Every structure is written in structure tokens, then in C-alpha cells.
Image (cartoon, rainbow, N blue to C red; front, top):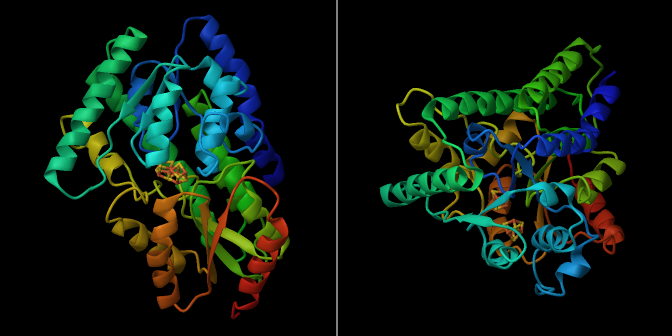
Length: 378
Ligand code: SF4
Ligand code: SF4
């Protein structure tokens, strides 16, 4: 039954493609997003459908390299490649695309992408603990609201934003409950299953239905018979975002007999503890607080990521940590030094991998992961 439910998530992308096409035919707008810093609540409050556009496949990279440098993060090249080849239907249906000045590669790519689609770029401050950066981010959210209103020809009211805040808060809570199931021993959900659920969710055009499905999955796992403790190593994955198509490290780790019990990255736990506070009067300020707290490596310093990792290692009873950096992602690559220190202080094996979306390094990845797993003391 669990497998069937996860399979249901795997088909979300396909099903929602048809729904989005139908919605477009009736005049509904679609807004494409690339990053967890994008305040989806404003898109929902505008009556539009937010869809995740992050490229996770190697297929369009060659086309992207005709314009972008080869020595660039595969996520950026894949995302741009889908856009320039018009091979991602979700990008195709997007009326507006929203980007942020997170890393240098992405922000410069968004400049070029404007030749293909209208792109609104939010200026993200890289400090999250000063009043000046907070004020800038609040202004950026207000600027996005205005752009959405102009582009989609709607009025976004506070009331609609608060409704959307409630929906996204509930969605995050439901997804967190799924991730938290793996605090148990043995973990009830494999790393690939977790990724399938978390990644597929971003394609859903019906948040209410998605929340019900997420809650249904938690309930189903609760009904399963408990099995005895499992001695297989429990691995936490951190680093750059991973999706279906770029999941090779999770797959290899599990093929080698370990459990990927938790993921700290954007496709995982990074934002799941962050809820928008509903006690204030201004929903834009409340959203700004939540989004600026996201611990991405483009923040400097980025201490909340290290705190989060520290507690996740304990909460998920982790035996080893894999830190995955996509090639040419300087921020995650350099931050690996600090992450390694945290993991080693906890006395655990730490493996930093640098890779791309190709399969050319599968054998060497396998050897390195295997060597790390042998260091796990059980
Ligand atoms: S890793 Fe950072 S830049 Fe990339 S999607 Fe996540 S929050 Fe955005
Ligand atoms: S993985 Fe790194 S380089 Fe690639 S888009 Fe994210 S932050 Fe930028």
C-alpha cells in the first residue's frame, strides 16, 4: 500500500500537466519558480498556479552550453536548457517566471532567460540578520506583488495572502510529518521514496488535494506493522538540491545497503521547520521573515544550516553524512568545510562529493560511498 501511495506521487507531474493545460484554456495563469526563496503565497493569492521549474535532467544541458559556459552548475544549465529548447511543458505554460539573486550563476542566467519569457528577478540580500537586509527583502516582496498584479491583471488582497499563508503552512507541516517518520528505526520510507514525494509535490496544481495526499501517506505509514531494528547505516544527505533525474547519489547509497533517512537540502528539510507567523497585521512582513530565514549557502554567514544539521543528525540518529555539491557551485563547495567540521565534531564519517548530472562518475562515486559506509560503526 505504501508503494502504491508513493507511486501516486510519482504520477503527479503527468496528471497536473493535463490539469494546467485545461486551467490555461479557461484563462488561469501559471507562474514558474526556481527556488525556495520565491514566496509562493503571493502567486496563490493572485489566483495563479505556481510550478517548480528547476532542471534536474542532463538532457537539455548540451543546448544550454551553446549559450552558457560549460563550467557552470548543471542545475542552472539544465534549467536554462529546458527553457531554450522549449522542452519543459511547465516552462512553456508559464506566463511569468520568478528568479532571485541567489548565486551568481543563476542571477546572470536569469538576465539571458528574459529573451525567452518575462522574468521577474527578486534582489535577495545575502545577510539575514540586519534590519537593512530585512527592509530590502520586504520591499522586494512588495515589488513582486506589484509585478504579479500588473502581469496577471489582478488585485492581490491581504485576505487572499493570509489564506495562501495558511495553505502553504499546512503543506509544509504535512511534508515535515512525512520526513519525520524516518526518525524511526528502521526508517519506513526510503530516500528515493522521500525524494519522489517531495519533488513531485512542486508540480501539483491543487494544494488542498496535495495536503490530503501527504497526510494520507503519514496515516498509512502509521498503520503499518512495526518491524525490528535494522543495522544498516543511516545516512543524511546535505548540499545542493536534488530531484528525480539527478538522484544518483541517493540511489547509489541505497543500492549499497544504507538508508538515506534524511535530506537537509532544498528538496528536503531545509525549509520544513519554517512557518509563516500569522499573528501580525502585515502578511508581506510575515512572509519576508520566513523566507529570509532559509539557510541556503548563498547567505553569509549561514549559521542556521549548521544548527539544523546538528539537530537533524541527532533527531534522525544519523551514522554518516554525504554532502553533495554540483560542479561549479562555489557557495556549497566552500561551505562544505564548515559542514565537515560539524559532522566530524559529532564523531561521524563525512563524505564531500562533487559531481554533475552525467553518469560518467557512477563507478567512482560508488567506490567513495562504499568506503565511507565501511567507516560507520554500528
Ligand atoms: S540551494 Fe539555495 S539557491 Fe538553490 S534552490 Fe535552494 S534556496 Fe534556492
Ligand atoms: S546548486 Fe549552487 S550554483 Fe547551482 S543554482 Fe543552486 S546555489 Fe547556484
